[in-house]
Length: 139
Image 1 (cartoon, helix red, strand yellow):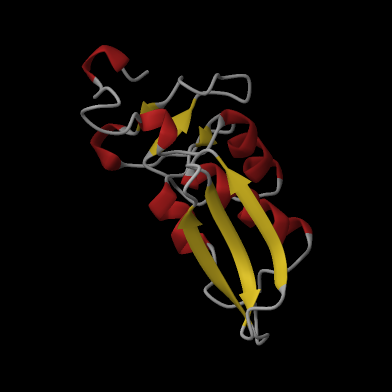
Image 2 (image 1 turned 45 degrees about the vertical axis):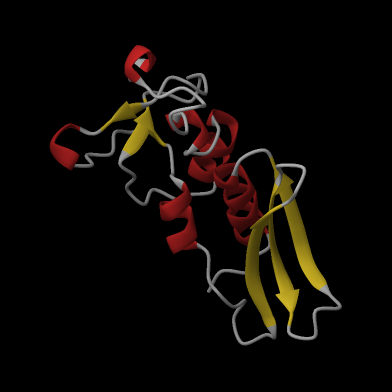
């Protein structure tokens, strides 16, 4: 498990648990069949948000009980820029209020396929991935 005593505080940088998706969302992604390796993981589905471990020697040997903790970058690689051959493309931004927004927007900017608003970018991206998987929109 990661020792948070050596982790940066809010003034020094971002905590690791804010850079990876929550335990609940990690579990949901696993349940939907995604086992793409991640550099971080939780040992089991009952692990808490801050119980994050890193693979030794950067090798990802996925155990049946392990749950990948996908980072913002890893989730970004899983999300397509466009939804198939549609006119919907991915947008991501941070609102003035501090919330992260991810959505697939139509080319004319009048329509949005679905909007995800979360406290962390990782959770917004994870919710978007879950939506795409549940609605068979990833091809």
